[in-house]
Image (cartoon, rainbow, N blue to C red; front, side):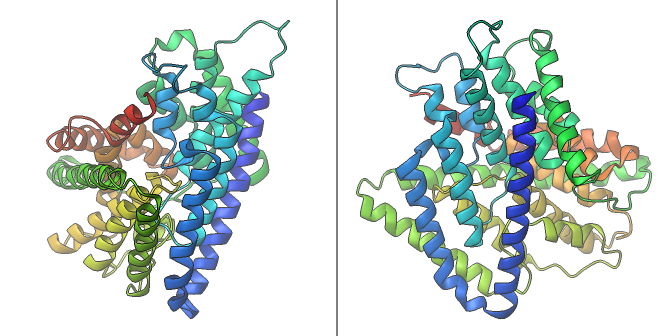
Length: 409
């Protein structure tokens, strides 16, 4: 319970800081957009320094680190759980992701929140009195990851499904009580403080008949492939960056990444920076078919790749959902479809994130809980399954599975 409440409080603080910084970047964009050429490279360099100096395990999303901690193939003598999830990783994750967002990096807070939450549960487990009944550490970490996702999105079912689909390497019966308690107490604490809310509100989704199945399949395939290719490009850039043996070359890489991001932000009328929640809400509640540009899609797509591959701390959940929503809107404009029904935009969001993570049920349940559109649940699950199959044509493993191996040796 202590870990769940602490996770909820940190998640609220984290969300509020992200919100305020996002407002600040909008202010900069509207009035002093040239400042991005100064603050973006500087923030990325500072972020890279924080990660390198305090905890290299704080880079990237944070989900691969948790997966590696739970992996029985990990050699504790070479890579300790404390290195991946200890207090240093927690502090560095929080500080570096906030710094990166201040520079406009195209990152989300959900992956980092999962690592932060697991770190909180790891620390709590260390301080359990010896005379108390011992609790299996891996079960606590799984519960911590689920609580982090539940608190970040206000999606308790999504947290549970995430734990089962992505983190659990044993039967659910072995840890179901700890998992449920963690998610319930974390979610209840967030709701007591912030009130009941939906992450994305109530977009209009009409009951989908058989006539929509073909469009759902088409949109799922396209976005699933797009998400998978984003993951593949991120990996290729990460591997290329590792070939830079000299620290000066790595610094130059991070600096140039910041300059490229600033260019993308400056020459976009729409917000190409940040997590992209504002982009999603604008598209989900626009009933006239907003003329979203291909340039915005390319900018956010490239921005997410560059941000992640630069080595800074930041997640891909929200950024993937926003890219998927843009693709969905562009396809609807191309096919002259009804813009009052937002089903296909939600399907595209599911398809893109699934293509990157290969977690179709987690993604489907997340979007369901974010929007409360239960009438479309079967279409959501269908979209997740179709996009997951399409993504396997690009790479049989997800981005997280590929990155997990980096923390096992």
